Image (cartoon, rainbow, N blue to C red; front, side, top):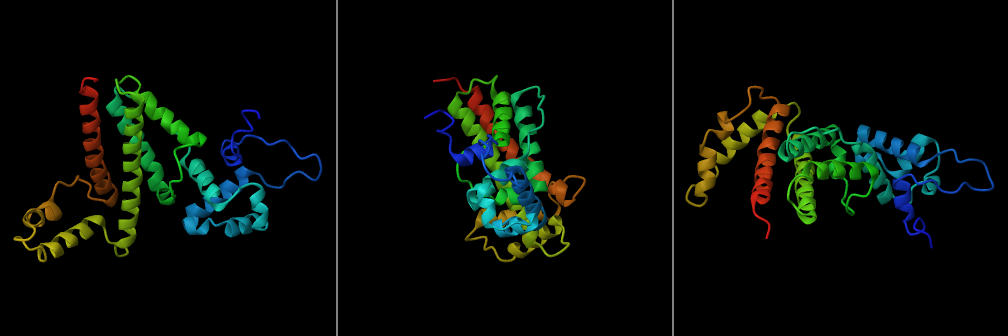
Length: 255
């Protein structure tokens, strides 16, 4: 068995490792790239529900069964779509690891905000596609000058990357839950006022103090109180807290 034989077929398709051409028959009318591009286009338009194998096959003018020649299963299609849609990371020229991780997180968040369905993809394993590996390489390069060992570097990537995905998913779901056209600032104000009248100060003293504060009425908002600005402000608070923790670990002497 060669090293190539040891690579699963799904992983070969993910990395576009060419299969030997068939000796007989006409050349294939489709390929993995066309199938994945059609699925991503459908997801961009209609969400993940629009990227089923039958719907993708119909858009390509073929039968659903014929797609199994290029994609082994719906789960494999989702992996292929996720790697394709994430794309390559930007070049990160940062002065230090903190600035670099901040740029890495914001760049990835921009992709997830552009394609909210990416945050809904199931996690079936560690990063394995060429684009996800490229994002991993970019973050590891940022952390290279630090004294962190490999386990801690991977932990930082998982923590920051997971935070990006979770906040993107939460932001999208909250936006869907708001009334049509209702700004985030109005929704937060209504939430604070409603809970202020319901939370019992004796039972929930600290939470009652929170809702009695000015946070939800006229709290620390950016000059631009648009949904994007408020989302960016919320994201930055959490990201900086994570980076503070990474900085503490980097400054700690190695055992």
